[in-house]
Amino acid sequence: MTNELAGKVAIVTGGASGLGYATVEKFVAEGARVVIADLDAEHGAKLAERCGPNARFERVDVSDADQVSALVATAVDEFGGLHVMVNNAGISCKMAKSLLHDDFADFTRVMSVNLLGVMLGTREAAKHMRTAGGGSIVNVSSIGGIQAGGGVTTYRASKSAVLFFTKCAAIELAPFAIRVNCLAPGSIPTPILESSAKQLSDEARERFVKTSRQAMRDNRPLEREGTPEDVAEAALYFASDRSAYVTGTVLPVDGGTTAGTPVHRRSKEGS
Image (cartoon, rainbow, N blue to C red; front, side, top):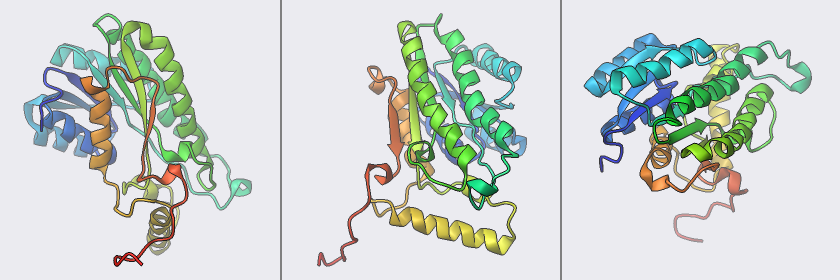
């Protein structure tokens, strides 16, 4: 720990689990005061209690403009400002057999959380930051928004839109010294994969997750598994002054998956 975020106030949406949870822990450890925003009040409150006086929980639906505005106001009123906004909240859609079988029943909700939630969070944070000397906004997309594929079309579309929105926002907000960057995690074990198969039986869902995880490993050049803490480290970089000259950037945190197909695995003996 280097206390990189000492004196800074951050909001992390979707902070009660997964990537958001790890980011909250990392930011608090680095000296930030953090507002945890999530719909999961039970786990969000427990995390805030665990992190101590430098964290507080707010139950927020990121697709609701009034709630996001109130979230920013809470950070400013309770902690004295807002320097970092991490728009991490996201949900998956139901896994469809193919595009031809997709009924798009969850399209509106997925887009409302994954895209509109990012747009609202960016806008509301920027309203404060533009009069406070600037700040850093970190949007969380996915390699599913970079690489085309089937099965969860709405999710992929929402995450792809986040990438482009981030670049647009970076250009618009640069005159106010507000940096806007994007993380694109991939092959990170979090509950979101399992949630896309919740319509399956327990046995089928377990088989689906296991098969999907193995496919991710096969398509990843680096052999080691990624962790939520890896993503939190990348978020810390964008949040810190180390990235003061970086904006409009998309950073995959994926073990090289989006770089290309891995070469044949070599044996430990080097044969």
